[in-house]
Length: 368
Image (tube, rainbow, N blue to C red):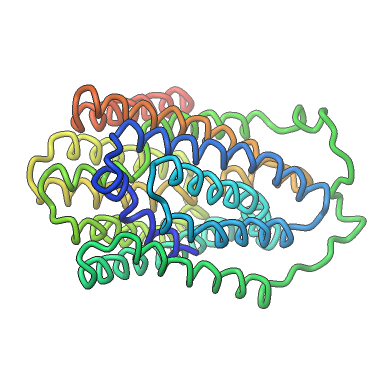
């Protein structure tokens, strides 16, 4: 699914702005609404997986919805259809993500979770590198044939559903394993303060780094050829994939606050470089740092959620976390698109850098 999604996401911003003549504000709203809707679904699917004491069925439903909606991108002739397709695709993601992450946490012990989540992010990123490369080849061979790329992306999506249905097995939950059978409002109150601190910090971090789709628009703005735009995605996710597993393993052995601080510093530096970039060299340095901060932070935050939530509320905890992050994503993407439209790309990245510095200050306050 990583291959399929990144084939589409690697060229979708340019398809919207060049073929469908949508503004950066429209792009930001589409990305924000799609991701926000995804996060709303995650709180329900996560809690439902706790209640069912099963994860795979919900994960399979989510991946199937995402696969079935992929052909809509190839048929889209208005931004509204793209919005519908993105919304349905992200709803599928919302159904699967919280149960999937809870499933990974169920299968691992505390001392291995950093490596486990790091490995998941690295494997996904292999697809996120292969996908844009395939998109670039198809774009070059077809003379910027966006719709051909979108059509081809449906193939790996359905393969992923087959692999999940055929080869991933789930052991039935033991009735005595402590997993609950009823929803209780009191369960939310039993989530520890460290969990709520992690969620709050993740919200602020999300506000500091809006959708990577804006990296593609920045590349176009500084003059990168259209058929080379997917290489931005390849570079970002190559760095992300190469660093996610090592930093995941590292998080099992060092204090999380130290790793958080390093990641935030990389994010602030990336936003600063991208705000100032007027050449491909500066832009490349910025997106390398962007990929690095993703590798440092993405898996770590998931580990913190898994480690601070009780086992019987793990799906619910991931759902709450994803909902909060989704709302922040909606605000961040819409804000970045509005600021981009009003003042240009430098203003959007500069604000992201300022918010990253605020994240660092919040972390220092927490340490004190």
